[in-house]
Figure 1 (spheres, rainbow, N blue to C red):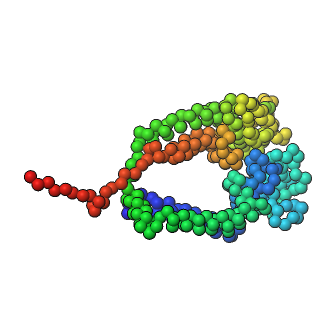
Figure 2 (cartoon, one colour):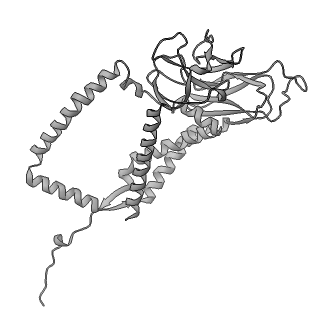
Figure 3 (tube, one colour):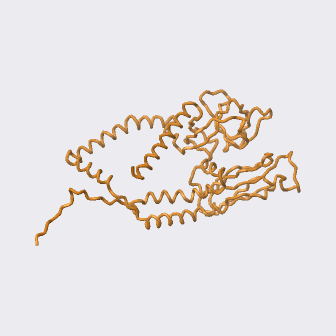
Length: 348
């Protein structure tokens, strides 16, 4: 088996196994798909997004996590997705708040009402499955798609009669046997040029990301000097005593603007010098990225490494652009079959 065919088989097998695992998780109830119907969590989750929620142990939930829970008012088939801001006074529930809401929720979310945590988001895919989108999807599957197949088949019968179809099949057979040639010079020129362009756009985000080790109570000013809107994510790590809190946890900054995040500490914790926090191991990570990806994706990448959102935003667009321009650096060379080669004999 050729290496190219082996890679195709391995990729298809991986996708098939992943799909089977995902379907089994959905059937067992460990994974739930939700459609965002309100803007209480914007811009982290926008109306029309599909959120993948994974079942978790409520004991592992901490303030700052986003959770999905049953509606405390008792409405059936209604699940709310808000952020945990604190534990309840009795420790048996959570206080929550929507990112776009000014006031916290009046209710307390019980641990048994927690459905899970969002782990992935598909932007705007919910419009196909919402109240209005369901009609669009049914119309697409039952009317437009079958009609399109019938029309395409009739056009093929008109344009390609029996003999023409045989030639078309032969042409496709030749394409499968063709030698694929890559012009590496053009490929590298396109990729490097696009990387430089998008890298220059993402450079202010990369330089503004990193770790804040000198944590003082007060305000930390974050600036966006780029030409594009910027998403800033703030995370706290190594804070074992949970003595530090920041507000807001993320922000979308317009071009040439700034924001001040407020750094607070637990009133029960003591200071060593009156300004700095006594937990020297605690860090605040600042992750900045151009607003070319959903905020949910940027937040997930920022939790892995503060520089990762900027790196991804500077590398994925060049890859996409290079693939779009593939006709410039990729083409096929057809091999002549023996029966098509005509020889002429010369007599001397």
